[in-house]
Image (cartoon, rainbow over all chains, first blue to last red; front, side, top):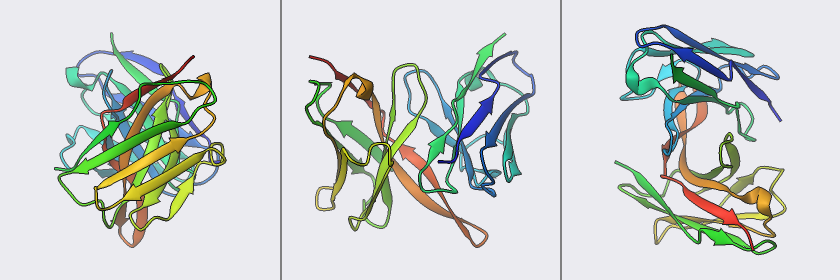
Length: 107
Length: 124
C-alpha cells in the first residue's frame, strides 16, 4: 500500500492567515494526489485533483503543489468557512489511500 | 447536478451481512466508476472498493474476502455487501463517484461527488 502521512494533525489559525498543510507519500506517486475538505457532519468535498488542479467552483484561495512524495495544500487567506478537516488521497495505486487528516481550528 | 443517496439498515448484528444501496440521480450511472468509502466515528477515511458501470470491480485487499459491490443500471443504483461484520465495521459509509479526469495526457482518479453518508452500527 502507498501510505499517506499528513502534518500537522491539527492547527489553530486566525481568519486571514495563510495556512499550509503537508502530505507525504511512502513512495513516489508523481502528481496522483487529491485534496478534500470535510466539515463536521458532512461528506468530504473535492478541492484539488492531480496535485494542483482546482476543482470547478472551489475558491482560488485554495492551491496545491508538489510532485513525487511531497505535497502541499495552501489556503492563502483563511476564511470562516474554511475551518474543517482536510484529507489528501493518492490515486497512483488503485488501492486508494487517504492521509490521516489535518483539522484546522479557530485560534 | 449529480446527487447520491445511501440507504440501508443503520444497525447490523455481529457476524451478519451489512447491505447498503446508493441511488444516483441527476445523471446516468453509465460510463463512470462508483465507489464505497467508510469512516469510523472520529477517524479517517478508508476506501472499500469500486465498480465500473459495466460490472468490473476492484476492492481494498484488507476487505476483499468479505466485500461485494454490484450495480443495477436499470435502477441507477449500486450496492455494497459486507459479510461477517464485527464492531470494527461500525462506521459512516459513503458512496461516491470515482471520476477519471484527464490532466494533459494523464488520467487521474478522484472522488468528485459524494453521498451524505449513512451510519452503520454493528451491535447485538
